[in-house]
Length: 339
Ligand code: TYM
Image (cartoon, rainbow, N blue to C red; front, side, top):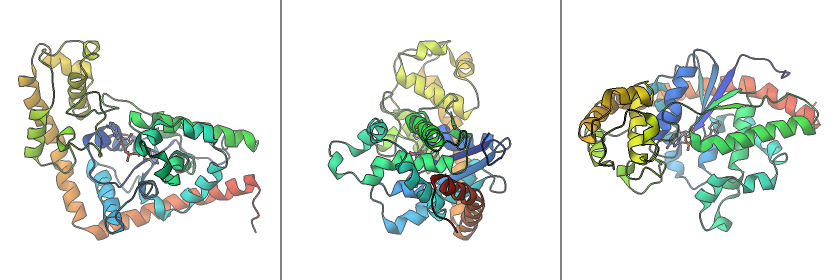
């Protein structure tokens, strides 16, 4: 047992780095809402992670408010879950330093996201980008979180967090001090793909705006993007296994399923034998139906920044009541002087 007790706890985070897209929504934010009744939930806006690549200081605080607004608009209840900015809880950076001394360089060298993000010029990447997954481990373990809802692209980072927890517990002979966190990666859309190329992940950095649907897109934008989405000429099958070699079709069926709280098999039961001429308008309707209210609520919330700031402030206070004792105990375990 961990020596700090609590009910099952969820922590997750999203970077305040520009337009949120359907992948962020279906892989993470929508799923945050489903967990809040059964778990003690902390949802962070990870601004310390954002500055691992250059950010405009004039825009960053507003981008943080936008993520908080997206959490609330999607249905996260700030009375139940703590919504806060990572930089407002200094314990994240404090624990990350200790974990920098636990994690091994060899572990970080295996991280594929660093290789992707640093590109060809690794020498010019920030040191922060390299140790990014160590900070992510600190985000999670700081709260002794037991479950972490994320999209599939974060799987390797979660494995690193598990390795860091295990090594700390072993090195300092405190079995089970840090619980080994479980990734919650699932549902029909754990990896939403580009609308232009079903083999590429939907991402903020894709140069084509047509590749992604964002939470700010108007109904017309959504309709246009689905109309232009790449497909194949075959009708939809009746079995999800038959989508395996059809990445674009698989992606659109997965998006439909996730938005309408169905499985892919349930979606196919209604559309088997039909082509995209019939499926695309239905998908557009579901997208507009689900995303329209989120977009409108986000706009309302952003028009009242003082309300968002109050939410972020309360969230940070709550987060610190959990993080403070964990860091204090961690420092005792490491052997630091404390009065
Ligand atoms: P970020 O900001 O890149 O993405 C936020 C969440 O969205 C998910 N996601 C996707 N899911 C499905 N399909 C996609 N195409 C897609 N693109 C993004 C991500 O998996 C993520 O869940 N490192 C994290 C943020 C983070 C974090 C944490 C998460 C920092 N500390 C602690 C959990 C726990 C990230 O960059 O997410």
